[in-house]
Length: 334
Image (cartoon, rainbow, N blue to C red):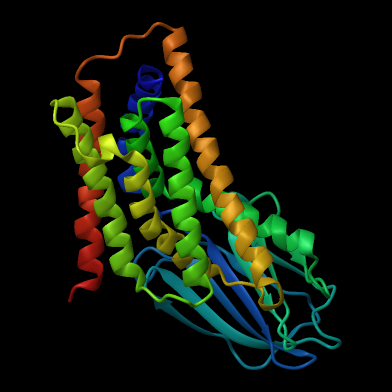
């Protein structure tokens, strides 16, 4: 088991290590929010990823022709995004209206859409390059909410390379299938607890320090790999499930931060929270399966695993994570 995982994990670690610095959290979706003020009036917020203070992605909101704007839109660059706010009116309301985003089909970017009604109900969906438009529905169904949030959970874990590097580093340290099951289960239970607690407002933790400590957790496990290869097994080697659970609590706060940016439908919070977490788990299991599949492929091809690969993988993972630590600390330390 250990040799099998090592072959796949080391191969994947080097690939992720080379790509992680550029890709982690850089696939930034656009965000469209429609908030109902009365039967015919809505506030619109359209946030588009930007590079610098004067260059934005070429995404443009297209509303039905019978929509009227109550004054010119207000726009500004804020952080790494271009934000446009406006107020619109449409006779009879927006139910049944088709809204699209021009330019989306020529990008790799998604658009998260949140529609909040005056009665507290909301609709959450995602536009993709191959489906750049949607129709405003009178009442979102439970199935739609579940599918949307499960998809967002899968996307978040698969695009969150810092989370994947942490799981990968733990996989390298696991030596039996039984310990692998316990380790993955411990990580799942831990981040499910803090994801729910933070999302429901029971615990409040500022996101920037959490992101920095998540990166530090990856550095810790990468160091444990090096120590293990040097004949000095540490805590992560001896008790990987305990380490996975402890740091999983922190990673759960990271998931909660992403979910808070998306928002939850007020009438279906338990369903959205549950399916988002299910999506995270599906994405995590897909990643673990990919590691094991790659391991079998390498073994089937009888490719040798050089003795220096464990250290190379650990240093690749640790170097990228160390960069993240300094980058994220610098983001919130004046």
